[in-house]
Length: 318
Image: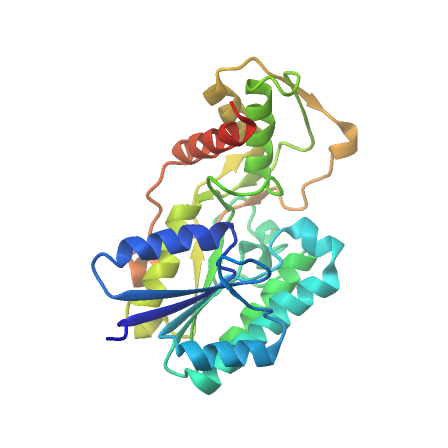
């Protein structure tokens, strides 16, 4: 008997994709769920080049999903900045390919699109320190944010053509398994290497003054799974922030990781790393997600930081 829910995940082999597959496996204990994992250049999933429309179309026609969760992206802002053409091709054109293929071959499928809080950009400065809502103007300030904003608008427009789209704009999320291209695991890696005796007890840092709204990846993937598995018609065509509504200063995040390690560590400001934060505070309101999906954060941020640090200690052999 075919599964009641056939979920196709793009970008399934990435950090968020791995946690999403764990979440869906848990859901499968109470409902029939079949997961189709697609990734690029990885043997553990169906190989998919999201920029090749024919490949995408064939996959949608073959799987006939009841929901698609689109994670595939050039996701690190630094990577997008260094390879902007690739970022636009994957993040915008890849999304377009997938959305049109779904409309053509699986028009009843829910299309769960993962946008980003980076789409708000300069709008955070318009309401200093206040949580932004989904009504804030999209004013991206980097390549990654711009590509995501363009794809976000595309998916919203296609809802008017019948795409059962649900857009999420998650704020900074982290957890065990994330690469050190992001600030929390970058700090945790350095602390873990000091703990393992691989590095001197000194951490060189840049600007620690910015405030960000941090989430645990496990809270984020709960929202994605809910959108894919639950019939919530009022969510179609809508956009939802995923945020805690609380901010943490970057310096305080590092202080907490050091405290959790039990080490005495010297923090040195490296002038070559100093960059003025274009956005001093980025905070989001998730009231819409609470209202429609009853979603809210459940995992305490210090618990998240402890998990990230333990992960890097294991990697460092500590």
